[in-house]
Length: 221
Image 1 (cartoon, one colour):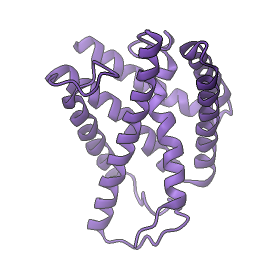
Image 2 (cartoon, rainbow, N blue to C red):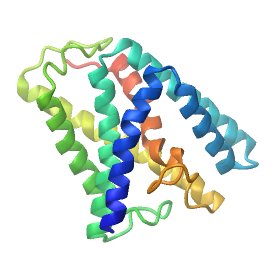
Image 3 (cartoon, one colour):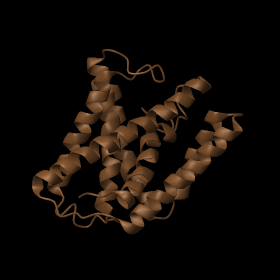
Image 4 (cartoon, helix red, strand yellow):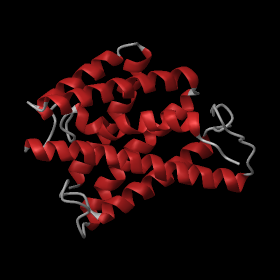
């Protein structure tokens, strides 16, 4: 199990800079193409589902573009980090403590994994913000009065991490559901320890449009 965990963490550490490289070099279409190809294979003859998935991928990647255009890079890095820590925390805690199953959609997911996802994302998120100066200053909210004291900032950060982690897990479960319908374990074999690219970025694909919409609509009194 330790080797599998090491492989999973290593893949995440490799994937993170590669993702940013493709984004900065304007080669995000490569990631989109691979994810779309894996989605086509996953949904097979389900044309309506296939179309819905492609539309969602387009919206997600466009949201990523808008986030990079409108927001500070630190925030973009932050939500990606939370998604990755959610995945790693769920895997480590789930494999270590096991326990009751969370859902039939993904039999390997447990309540201990759920707790681990939240725990590691919270710890990692607060550490990230602690070492990044003026994290909140350059985040642009459309409809927000963001004059909060430290305790309120910490509460906001905690709630935001919990929501982002939850959305990431929903994305993971959604792809797991379609994998279960297709009776396959992985969406591909491009990433060791993860399977396909879609296996790795499923949570991120859901988190990015959520984060963008949230920043546009969030109101704090």
